[in-house]
Length: 67
Image (cartoon, rainbow, N blue to C red; front, side, top):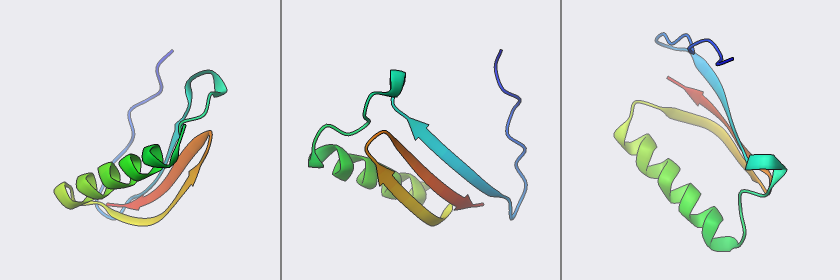
């Protein structure tokens, strides 16, 4: 069953987690970390996000965004 849509409003803080499929690692080498970091930076530049914190871990990534 799909989850309910995220409630969004000005000033909301969202905790976003990305996980590897089947507990597999998200990152296979240093280039993967660099590409994800660049992709996140590009999206933050395009959007109205303010990233409060981020953490790249082998099996998942987590971010705390302020919109």
